[in-house]
Image (tube, rainbow, N blue to C red; front, top):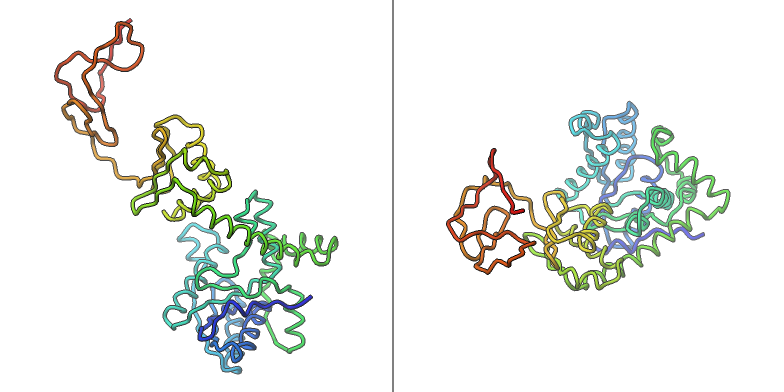
Length: 372
């Protein structure tokens, strides 16, 4: 099977910052980037982040420094206290480590003028990600797996297997360090790597490669659906929210509707979780006028054939206001009052005898006596 390193993600003139932990995957990535630098017309620098988690971290930093000095690769090193940051944030150590590491990579790239950041995710990582999303109930969005490119972040190794990585390092006599946490079964991804994938490999030696290929095909399908969804009518996005013509949007196939809603939420910087998407779809398709759904920083309200997603604003105390003919704005309400003849048998609506009325919040002791 051919070794498919995606040099096409890098253009002539790019400056690539390679994330290097010192492990096998990152050393392979750095070497392959250097292999193609003169031919591709781009430059390569390395970045190492010291997480402050394990005693071995000092040795890993020394290893990366020594190797980069020997091969004349510019190196940028960052330090962080992940355990302390995790406690302060109330997050897990692994999640915090990832957040600090990526923050360091992006800050370094911007400060030093790098145009791309490369990480060493390979086909095995891709297969693990797809399977983990699958067992968690993900749809097409999650089954696309790790993206080859997201902005300035690239992953050129997604079609390279771990066996190919190890074979390359062995043939080129490239040293690397081992992270003992990669064998810790407390992490779900490690159990997937050391238990599930080897079992799939017994069923089909090309299982990892085929899963990575399937993710690539699903990404193509998803990109097409994204393009089709963007052209779906009935969704008006503005700087202060989203307005939806429900009948127009629901005239489209449900997959396009859900995708268009996801795009609208993303535009508002709301993560389009399945819970939110299902809630919005149910609000449009089944809920009565006046129903609402709370979203992070926003609220979605249905009003007949319209769905409005607007920012949550601090509620101000409702002051008494005179009730007049026509529409009276009152907080989030718009109260209509008009002259009409009350039917002899009134079974709907509230009819008032002409007079002076005031809109105010309910107070203790208020009662309303309805006719029998």
